[in-house]
Length: 299
Ligand SMILES: C[S@@+](CC[C@H](N)C(=O)[O-])C[C@H]1O[C@@H](n2cnc3c(N)ncnc32)[C@H](O)[C@@H]1O
Image (cartoon, rainbow, N blue to C red):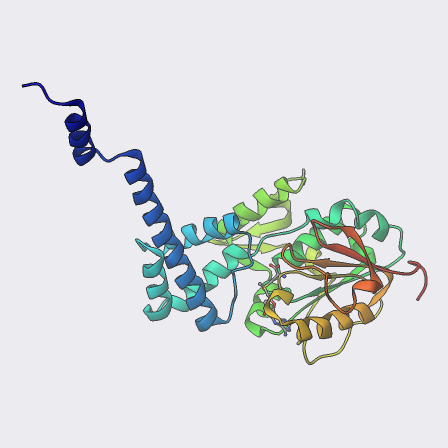
């Protein structure tokens, strides 16, 4: 029996999923996953007060996927369910948080270090240092550049639990692999294992890195300023604040900095539209590095 071509085409359409159907199916899955991620992030924000929505999407996704695998959850809604109802939910959240804290040393190597090196003594404030990875990477960088012994690093946060972790300098050994990879990515050439001692499932940054760091409790909203800083690093903290609070805290950083001192902010933060903008010049737009106007030698 000879079929009309149009009939044949209609049969094909009925039985074979066409590209457009596949595309629609894929986009439904994408949309479902997006809904689940939105729910997960909203749940985390409500339950733990952390807003990850401003983190780089690709990097956040890699970390959420890793957390989902570790939690043996099929979907992101199942991960949220575990965060809210599992007795290990808090520990799971700590893991997500740790996974989100990247060592960020590249930001300072090219544009800040050459200036800092010229000073007889260097003062640095890491505000909102969380569990301290960023602070240790700064100490490590100053050590490699040969002026850690001429520096004092103040590392502050208002989360006492995080500060304890930071001042102990002890991290899960498996995270050290990530730190070592970050170190190499940011141009580090030495053997990263020289910087920590290994224990069972834990690794501790060596004491020489800690000697120049002072860890202390400090609430950016209610506590005072630190004086005469050459560099203030405050990354991924102001994203949690509204404009009024941002201006309030940025005024503290401005007062804390010497003329010519540097301010380092997170990738998603900037001085644009803030009350202090005119008091700074931009050193690096992408890396959010600013310099307080005035001569570096003026007090
Ligand atoms: C997302 S973490 C950023 C940590 C690190 N700077 C980084 O970029 O990986 C935000 C940190 O800001 C701290 N923080 C939030 N509000 C604060 C406040 N009012 N005073 C001091 N620290 C604060 C939190 O405790 C948390 O450790």
